[in-house]
Length: 250
Length: 250
DNA sequence: CGTAGACTTGACGGCACTCAAACAAGGTGG
DNA sequence: CCACCTTGTTTGAGTGCCGTCAAGTCTACG
Image (tube, rainbow over all chains, first blue to last red; front, side, top):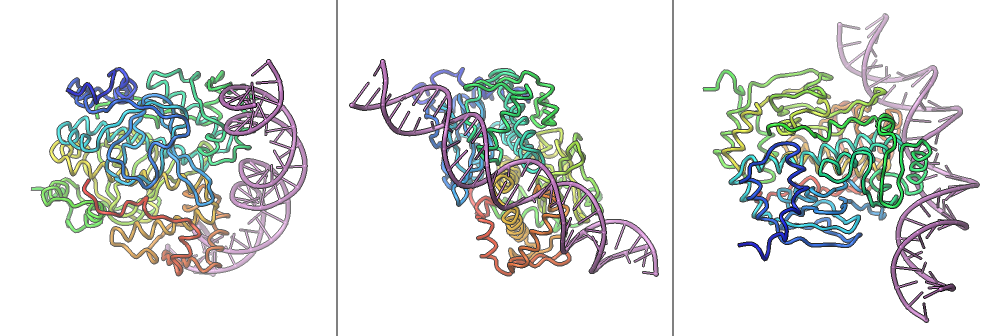
């Protein structure tokens, strides 16, 4: 009986299952097998490091609430964020097979998370081939986003790049039942955004103001809203197909 | 008996198995199961498109020789290359679970390749959990490289970015038995490189000349050699850990 | 020998950077 | 309850990396 070690409330996994089932149905046995393996939820304040670069975690971390980021540090102290994670995302599922993490994962906001041992994940892959493919899929969804960010960094102007991120986060949060595509919680600082967009904080600030002036963005406190969704998507050349929001047999 | 449909020579899969076994041992049964499923090899000339954006391929393509690239096109015709593939790489293994491709794959040089049906891959994942994890791993290796490119585009100067790519390709080719880290075949044009690095072709040319002037790069015809490997690595802040070249139990 | 594609060079312009300072807001302690 | 500090945002001035445009050169190949 896992009452003491497991999650206090299975409903905490809702975003996780929603993320997967948005792409393909899970069987009740698959859901149960997964749910049993998660440990008790834990919390961390904003700025805390969940896993450090070079570590070899023995478990993977599922984000339950808040926002985290994958970050790499340069020699001169500059930082590049390679991904934002939202609730329902595994922040380091790849460490299950990669073993050593090549980047750190930090809490951008206060977060809640739960973990699952790699040994347990291995057992899942031995017994549940379809569930195993769905976990694989979860990492593939991440890399599709990575590719899109690469395009943004390589070929989009700062303005379009910013617009693109706001479009993306709306859809990703909405896909796990948090907010709507044009209105959502996003408690990151402009400095965090700068590290994600490969820009200076100063320039991000100017770009944000430009988006505001064009009536494409309202962003006060931690609430983002996009008053003209078509407009901002056009500016960003945003095409949501890379997010793979269709249900398919996988 | 698969003689007619299968590969003419199993030795063609050497780079593929070498890529995987560099990271973990495969069993003879796993090797055999995989090898049987590949179709007869085919060729394509430089510039040809292997899979197009938006397609839903029913098979995945394994590169046997040559170089390919994953490319996304922007509205104005600009191109961003998000990855180079070398022999032994699956160029679109992710389409097995993602179903629809969000980018195209093009031959940069003349290539040979072979394919495996998604239905066969699914059977592999049902019967061979460890092999299945190794295929998953193959896609994770790709995304680790993606993350490193993101860092390059976001935070590295054009010079360091170029240096980094030359370091990376040497190690990747060497890892599948082609060339050495400081001397290898790399038949891409400066325009291709520009699309990969998010720069203009003109500026790439200037950066290449800069590397030459510093005695860090010799690149004539299709042969790259790096006369001062330590020097170019230092300039690039190159750390090979992201390539996951260690053998581990996975 | 002519042509196409790749590479190279120069002039000029702009997007985004750095440096520096001011402003806003929330939290803390005296 | 207010002074003070910290963190985040905003603004301005000056700079530089890299882009564009436009030629010109080199090489492979038919």
